[in-house]
Image 1 (cartoon, rainbow, N blue to C red):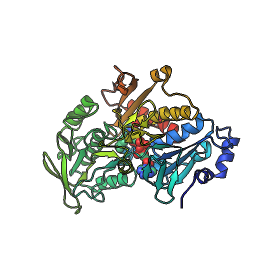
Image 2 (tube, rainbow, N blue to C red):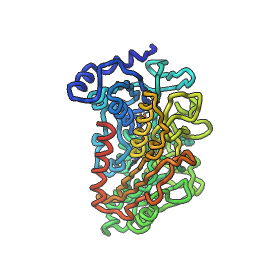
Image 3 (cartoon, protein in one colour):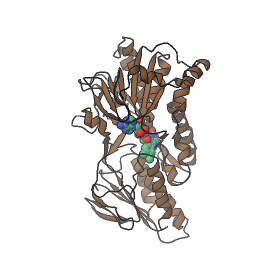
Image 4 (cartoon, rainbow, N blue to C red):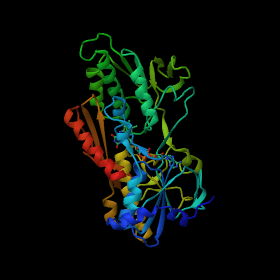
Length: 435
Ligand SMILES: Cc1cc2nc3c(=O)[nH]c(=O)nc-3n(C[C@H](O)[C@H](O)[C@H](O)COP(=O)(O)OP(=O)(O)OC[C@H]3O[C@@H](n4cnc5c(N)ncnc54)[C@H](O)[C@@H]3O)c2cc1C
């Protein structure tokens, strides 16, 4: 079956339109002036779907295509490992987008984009046409010889894999060995892998009694980093690794994964350029890039990520008119974070609405105000966290986003106050994105 633009619009539940109108929301019943199709219901996709509906005053129809029934947030997901949170706490349904904002949510998977024809192929619905297309499909992992996710979960796209890793940590010996890898940059959430090392060291260090001195044998957390050094909050993590978790965490830079033995859960080994490391649990986070739909369709060219103009987030590939890429899949040098995906989505939403109304996105005033920001909070212990923030602005001379001098902020230490602030910050981000 091939879906037409009209079919898609009609799939918005009748109750959504009714509720939107009675609740004073922005959705209008009139025929839309334009139709935006969004691929991917994560941080980038949900934010743009919501904001296009709100800022266009309901004049632009939005269809969100997502293969999963709901979204499990990676943000905060390391707290599933130490059971401070449950998956349900980080699971967001698409009801609010549908009912409050009139977004048409379709459960399907996009397989291919044909730029010149302005068409996408969906797994269930076949080929459909779009007016504008926003690609917000996140990341995909490189294949690693021997890596079997059943026995070595990545837990880097949150959900079942995170639960599996929690269960394996739960069952491993108190003084056992946990081996994890850090992918080559750029990867999703720069401090995230180091934060994970701390969370796991805290779990095992408490359980074994090593941290409070009641046990003398340390568990081991081996961090194999494909990069030459710690990639974010260097002084905080160096101090956490050497002091707080000294004797537990062993950090090894320049360790690129070559292959893995993981078919037998009782014999798990990571082979790297710095040697081979066996563990009771291994957590390999492969190097990643944009999802294969972008690669297959020609949106990434030779790169792993889609090159975009950061004024609009339109792809720079001229075969694809009215196609935008936001969030982790895009290839600007900005950090890959949920906070950043949310910020990019708003710039892209504004630009699409301007284009639909025949207005330029390149006015001097707008160019001066193109800024994005990123924030990552990192749990370091069971109840203490650190944080990292950065602001980027558009540089018209280079046509790229640049870190605003002096904007890089770091907690420089971990504290309970930061831990509590982390929940305020994440709840704001979740509400702004999904609700
Ligand atoms: C442990 C961890 C901690 C993190 N902590 C932070 C933090 O403190 N702060 C922060 O800002 N960020 C953090 N992040 C990073 C953040 O989660 C990502 O940067 C963010 O999820 C990127 O958003 P996205 O919309 O680009 O991708 P995603 O959120 O991954 O969404 C992509 C969506 O696209 C869907 N999709 C995939 N393929 C297709 C297809 N072919 N068709 C249709 N849909 C498709 C997927 O199902 C998914 O729902 C963390 C990440 C991890 C792993």
